[in-house]
Length: 92
Length: 289
Image (tube, rainbow over all chains, first blue to last red; front, side):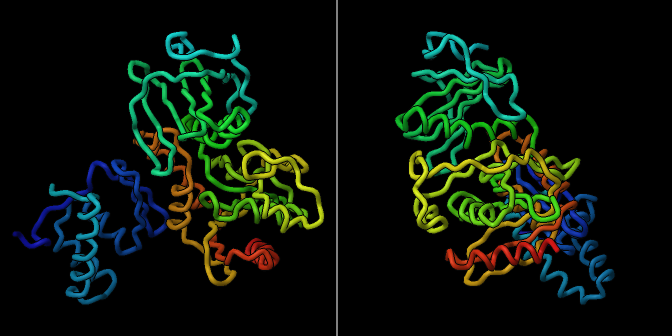
């Protein structure tokens, strides 16, 4: 199986979002459930919408928040697994 | 379409009665003894479900098992109300409690499961929570303390003005809550397991000062919510006639976000203890100060 970060993920067409300051709320229209994203989650989501690759998103966040890329990547993997589990993203 | 055709229903009156709820002017209600055929769309898992009516555009059916059902036709602005065993009075109450808020939501309003009261200073507070979380008990206590009540169950929020009104003015309390809050008073007329009280001085609409999402907890606390958290509370407590309708779900999300961005919000946690209600009043006042 390909490594998660090598995949090209994009938001599911079932996902509708709204921005609230630095945070985002996403509604999954298929199952009427909703999710809150914090500031970092919002940055990742924004990158996915822009079509950026996951390594590029990781590096951008690490630079913006002055955090070790390995730590960002670990958090990103957990976050992306959550998004996949809830059908909020799909392979593009 | 005509939901009242004789082959699917038997209205008890020749003409529909007006539905006396703001925002639903022109809508009529007819009692019937049978329902049109329908196909399920959604269920809350607790006995209430939404259905489509095959062959009828813009017609939906809402039913609560053993209580009542309503076939709603948007083109003819008519509702067929069928008693499913709860009795006529409870069916009427269900129409106001369950159908009217969902219908208003379907028509584009943001309608939230919440009590609304006017606080000192004129602004309204929303106490949002699902059923049986204590909204009416807290609202009744605050009303007794002099806070004018807009309504105790369903509130319409206008995101453009950040104002709030009740779907209809009322206060219904469980009998035990009534006795605890009004010891020594006679028990008012009851419908089902709740007593009904007049809401007091009418307050039609007020600017929304703050949202409080009610939660159970070991201590009385009011914790600020971020706009995203407040938005999710509004969505969680929102009404929908057809929760599978994607366009309307997206609209509710954006309406909720507009309100959450404009109004301070708090999670009001407390134990179920009548003796702690004054603490909640003080927390509300402090949050509004």
